[in-house]
Image 1 (cartoon, rainbow, N blue to C red):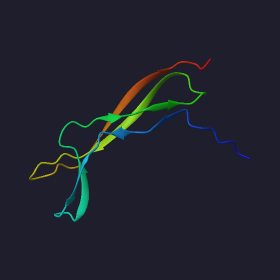
Image 2 (cartoon, rainbow, N blue to C red; image 1 turned 180 degrees about the vertical axis):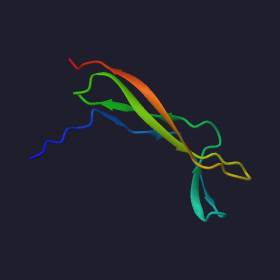
Image 3 (cartoon, rainbow, N blue to C red; image 1 turned 135 degrees about the vertical axis):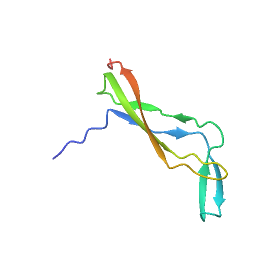
Image 4 (cartoon, one colour; image 1 turned 90 degrees about the vertical axis):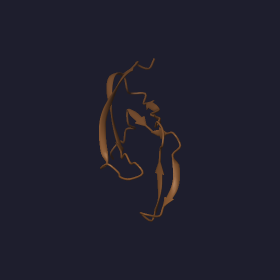
Length: 87
């Protein structure tokens, strides 16, 4: 029987609330930000985790104006984290 271990780090992204409209040109509901976007990444560290870690973060987005949209883009970032041993 296999033992399943919980992940050492769990991240759940939370973004600032987007504006939502129905875009008749595309025939679908869209969500967008007209100002700065804030994304929080609460990190939950498992009991077995300790030491220095680097958490990869990929952000995919698309920029649009009233007249055109740029192709979607993905930016890859890293967040260094030092985890103290439990105990």
